[in-house]
Length: 229
Image (cartoon, rainbow, N blue to C red; front, side, top):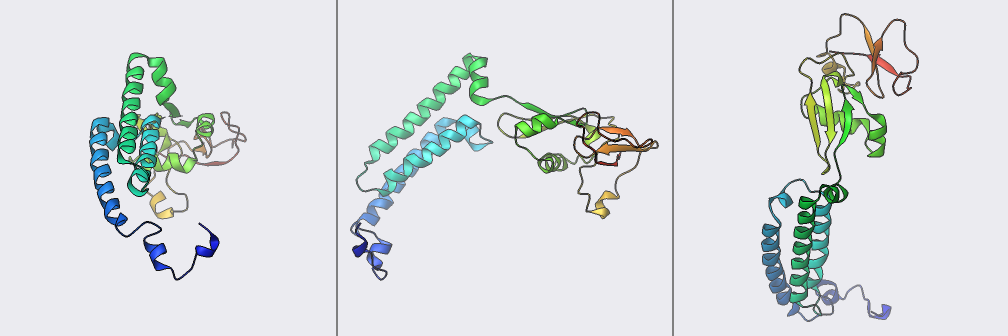
């Protein structure tokens, strides 16, 4: 469009564009048909598309968004090309899932694998860094499951599809509090072990309070707080 054709008071261009007003009805019809086709394809993709998405399923969702937009809005694009693209996305996902079902190696390459973030009350700092996670994300995941002591966590997994899975140790042990240290009122729910221990704020490793430790034996950090039960 030539810049001389752009006028601030040209409401027909602003609201309707260069297409005739009748195209608004066509947009309605296009959107209805694409919406129905999208619902059918989503149903055929399976129940997983309604849950937490894997990398493959997220890629398909983003692709579908790019597919349906031109078919609904551009007058020079036909509907059949959009429907065909939706069917291609369905075919690719089905075939890729089939390959993953037949070969565990292919499945790991496509879907990824789980990662251990906490092991026996100790944060695996290297794995946390590889997955670009912060301590607060881990603490929030634990608090959402009513786990307030890192020492009670036997395993914390980051699943391939991005969710956290927590396996607790029923006995537990003294460990690092995952409650906000600034909230003194909620911190009062904690009990202290009979033998004073300190917990590393970086990885959760515990050491005797006396003599006071310097660098953590696991992550080499030097920031300690009281361990709790």
